[in-house]
Image (cartoon, rainbow, N blue to C red; front, top):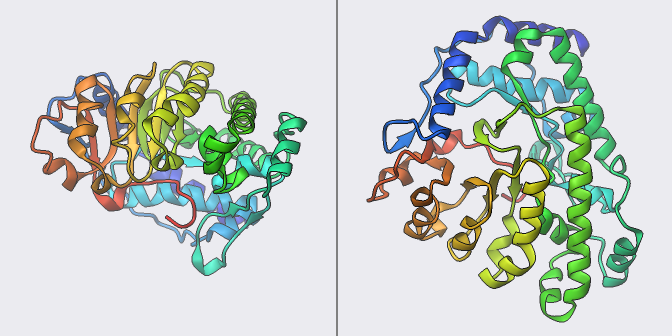
Length: 361
């Protein structure tokens, strides 16, 4: 396997055109700093650079089970971008799915078959007694569950970057999928958590405070291993301002009032802890809380996966009209906006969007 890894990485190094990568970066920075002329933004496509070697097709399960397979799976995404002359930023991650943070609390991780080729998820702890026990135990060992494997994979990526300086200069290792406080809390508690907003709010607040503290502890360790690169970060193939992308898929189930009371203060704490800026991703409907979300300090962008479920005029009024970027919007949606987008929207074809969802999506 090591021979295959070295052969593929040498191929990737040869095909990276650093002038094109710098041009791509310059265009992204222009967009993020409101210097892009045009209603929407999409970087100039690269000149295609097809591979000269065979890159193995690695399944998710194979990558999770073996470090070398993880390297091959992730760097193959960069090879595919170069081969297609794509516009995405070149990036890789420790690809262990949404189960990372719940696994620290003892949630059982499970995977589907190789044929499903989808990321693992986790089962909830189940029962309020187990939630109380977890809360009473405090912040868990961040190296427990999948945590230690994530950090070891980061070390393996660092070895690649040391050996391949062209890759190190042009491929970003972005932060793992630790979701956000509300999403991780839902997975840990289970869907019964939504009743707790009404019949056990004290326990729910304690759990969410604990999950937030655990998120911060985990990401502090991450940035010790993978120091942030400055004002901008790469994630899912796009560049953004700030260090974090918080995933808030569970918000579709909550009212604006509950979001503002329970969730937003914790998201703000996470932003403030890591430089004061970042992006929020959400699935499903978000137009009912987007105004409250837009009032966060340091929110530089949003990424949404189902614009057709939203009143996009409400979304636009609370993002592009306020200088908040929309990242990864389906080009067809932008083309039918029927109003100015003010150079604040990054567009791509639907197939070019790279999201990190739970296995069912």
